[in-house]
Image (tube, rainbow, N blue to C red):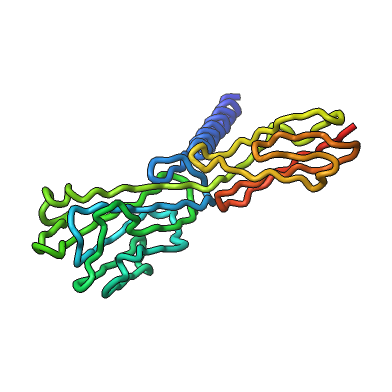
Length: 245
């Protein structure tokens, strides 16, 4: 009897351990530069620079954590006014440098330095980091992150993150209206930081129309579908079946 009780207790303990492990995994949060995200999502980061002087030399390294797959890079036009070299095939990082002596790089007004596109391939906290060194074209003053920290602080570096919608929901998937009546459909987009801009369309304007804010107007008896589509490039769509009586 004691052996049976012991065996039962062992099974219960093991089940508890596996249950806790499963709960821990389910509760694992995914973020991109501090913002809520999900595995499989496409995310963007735009590093913008405002410098006190025009620059003749810029050297930079961007590192990123595991679980981020680099999908694309867009460099600013200023970087390509002279000699420009980039290496995007490094492990968890990319490097680029630009030397522009005849036509210095003008970042005296806030402008995009580099834009990156990533796909999140695993759960957990994801992060990108920019290390930047600049040399101005007038006094040869260095704004290096590992050199003169006082001058480096004069560079204003802004990080703009954008996350594409990974889910779209409508408050109604089917709707019945009498001729002449109206109803406003509402779209919910996640994550909350994603663009809320959507496009509303109907496949039968003779049955029901929809305006830019999701207001449906019943026109005549019949059935049609109202489609809601995200405009941020994620191409998420949802439909609502409308029956006019």
